[in-house]
Amino acid sequence: MNVSAMIKHPTIFLSAFICTFALVPGVRSVAQSAPDASKDWVVTAAEIPMRDGTKLHTLIAAPKLPSGSMPFIMQRTPYGTPEELMKSLPPGASASLAQQGYIRVWQDIRGKFKSEGTFVMLRQPHAEKDIRGIDESTDTYDTIDWLVKHVPGNNGRVGIAGVSYDGWLAAMALIHPHPALKAASPQAPVADMFFGDDFHHNGAFRLSYGFEYVWMLESGKELNTTWPIDLPDAYNWYLRMGPLSNANANYLHGKYPSWNDFVAHPNYDAFWQKQAIAPYLKSPLTVPTLVVGGWYDQEDFYGPQRIYAELAQHDPYHNAYLVLGPWNHGGWEGGPGQKLGPIDFGSATGNYYREKILMPWFDSRLKTTGKTDSSFAHVWTFETGSGKWITGDSWPPKATVKRNLYLNSGQSASFERPKATDAAGVETYVSDPAHPAPYRKRPILPTYGDGSTWYTWLTDDQRDLQMRADVLTWKTAPLSSDITIAGDVLADLFAATTGTDSDWVIKLLDIYPDEYPAEPTLSGYQLIISDEAFRGRFRKSFERPEPIPSNHVEEYRIDLHTADHVFLKGHRIGVQIQSTWFPLIDHNPQKFVPNIFEAKAEDFQIATQSIYRSRRHPTHLVLPVREASANKQRHP
Image (cartoon, rainbow, N blue to C red; front, side, top):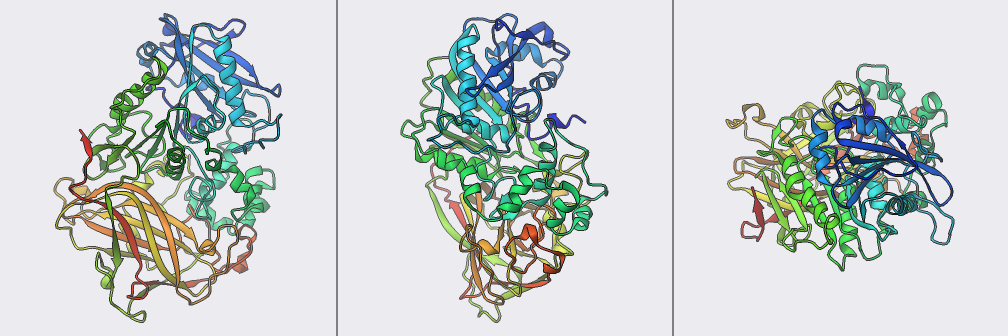
């Protein structure tokens, strides 16, 4: 298995962008092993010096028959050598891609594969006062400066793009952009590793992903995919591992910097705040930027929303663009994009995005004067449920009405506020850290292991969890007409626990009719539309956690992020609540301890959880409902 070709999509744009160049003097040629690449391309390698003298390994590709001056598209990555990325071209792709007229550049970032220096996970931007400081922004600046000065046949215009970590690197280029940077596309970029991206969600630690990603990336200059997981179900392996304190004691032995950072910084302190990218994007946006994300991104759905929102607030020149489609992590970069798991979206959404959005957007900024067609929309969202592309000027759209979907008796949900007293309006369940609810169907294989369903688990049927006593589900009656939501979904949870800490996991579901002739295998299917976890200790402050008062009703306002979805007539709207999501989210001891990463086995306890649906404490979801008369432009 070529893990480097599948992890976080390092080969972005191989199906849409293979860019071109004229041979760079003084650097060596690199043979191509792709079946037909040698007929169409000349590839050279360069060791590009940074301002501190560190040299970064870079590969530059050009067609053998270039025409005129051409722009660059560059990608910086920690995931594999540029040579490996070029080799991953599918047979037959080379000739057609060589005609697109771009100079294509790949680069290993500091400390990875063939580049010099020390790798630092999500290296924090250097202090403004440090004139000798380096970070990913300065490395991008220095690389662009070298390219435009040393590569013949370029037109002086550079674009940067990438998915996930590579998307974060593309966003970092915006902090102090080189004058030649004329287009950027951060795709599934991470924005804040404590609030909503890979490692934490609202302070709840993403155990299996965090452990395996750190193991893979920080074992050495290359990727380590020899997992320590020696059981056929990772669920059982993580149960056996026990408290987080056992990770270093038994497996990592203090040798993995990011894990040590997790342990040292369990709260949202200066370490995480300095690493978050949004505070560095306060300057007016001068570089046209296309942010891309997927509704079913299992890794970085928060990042695109957060970065686009920040850019849009500082956009006097109207340079911020957004695309959100029905994809998993990086699912837009290749393939038709018509299905994910069992869900068929009715059209080839990936093809549409690449042909109608991505390529025209880059072409207009890099191949010509950079002036954009004024008719090109700033926001493109795929409306799941209806199967239509919607365009607009901003996101979230303004033409929505907030409607509260309340939990009611009999595990029903409706838009009517409950009338029950606290004594009658409550549902309870027992949460046991020793028997947590799984986050996807078992067996759960290692995240990047052969046969892993990590990539599609957000489309898993949630009905199986209804059989568990520690998971509660509420449903509306079958809808008499379509209900469309477009924008941010918020959960307003009123809950109590017998413990002094607790996790809360909330999901908004589209529940298909019990009989669904259009696709019988989806009869009764429960599809996640929005979801999130929240660690209760952070209900008042992410910087200064507090114990939860036992047996006391507390209010939790939880951001379930953005959605664009039609609940069709005959479907039901569902809400599901639980306190474990294992091993995606680590064990919460359910007893407050200063640092969960240092908790011992004896700190873990069973807790009874109470979800209130009363007049005084009405748990509900706030849905951004788009009225049928709202002005929106649809595309087939």
